[in-house]
Length: 145
Image 1 (tube, rainbow, N blue to C red):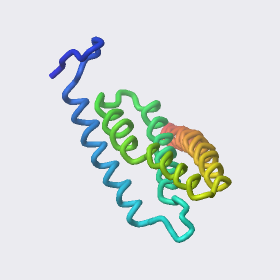
Image 2: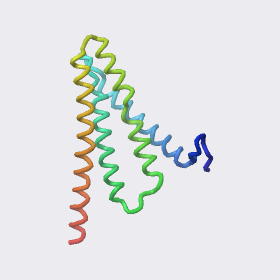
Image 3: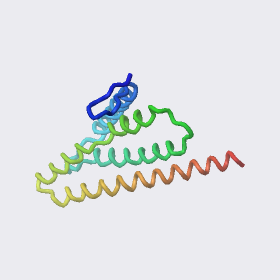
Image 4: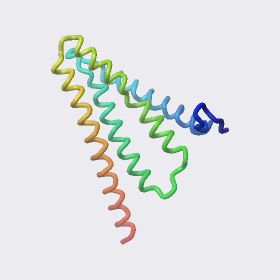
């Protein structure tokens, strides 16, 4: 089912369903990480840090695999990328936790968290994509030999 939204973009029911399903799975996994890694006595938001960095690494792997795929299913990117990994990672919690650290008088920790998450997430996506492309190339060479 396709309908036109305001602005002329087509709404696709299958894509919306894939994003919703992936989002539910990703958000559920995110909740599981928060339960498994609650904020400790130090008040540092480790669960959000590791969730965002791991989510970025998984996005790097996923995008590299999609780049290598000959004809990925049209719902794969909305299901896994936008939905699952979008639901798993959390910018809003990152912002709220930074604010909480600032309001708690921990400005140095807040800015270290702010910058550290950004750097770690960017490195994670880049290294994961690079490693995945290398692994795919190695597998292809071995199959061709």
